[in-house]
Image (cartoon, rainbow, N blue to C red; front, top):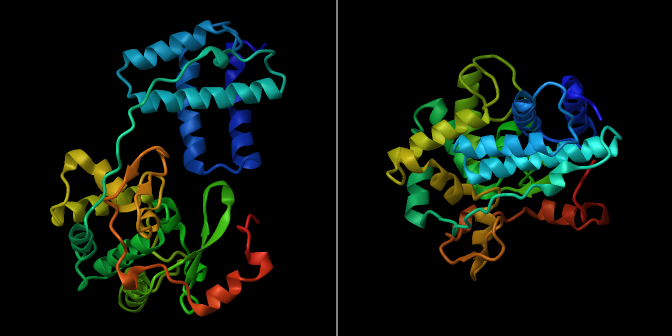
Length: 309
């Protein structure tokens, strides 16, 4: 079993495995790195990784630090994945994380914006400015497609097929999929491409659809700041409940626009046993109705399955 000084090398090998073999997103790998570095810092000299005592001491320190149950559960998940890798590679002979128990987490009903709140939020950007055209296009695109924000920021101009009404998306694990885009979102993107994007780029080139004033791709953190600003402007949330806006607009790792297309109660993605009847149905012109060309394309046998190439 490797002593503590070797844990840095083990962490690097594990992160390389996650990035290359498993194809995990960079944000996930970065989270693993931070969690494991914190664990490594808690180890004493010459302690063995296969011992349970260092793990118990580390978990106790997380509770004493006042960390939320969700954050502790994430740390434990990181440790379990790390020790599973060590076990499979023969670095340890037994897995001490099998003795750990995850903290109980509360399950709350999801919250959703009503139709008026959604309309006010989407109408918040100033369309007389190029940034406003971009932000309106991003909000319409997010509402119509249900993409993750990280996916939205990585959409390239070449990924969007405006004539056929769909966008190619690269999601977690480098998996590719086709997502229909509604007419209103396509029109907002068209306005942005015509009158907003050229002014933001100022002659510079960028492959990304949504760009900043400096010509680079919009990043997830910047978009959430913009969303928070527009949420306050629309009067639908305050600074202390930013998560509410996130859950209401795109759901917790989910698709409220997709959920809202159902007439009956919606099963929440994170909590299968919880239902909500408050989901706002999409307006008719914002529904993700694919074009005839996309319908014909998806009817082909090779398009019947999700593209994993």
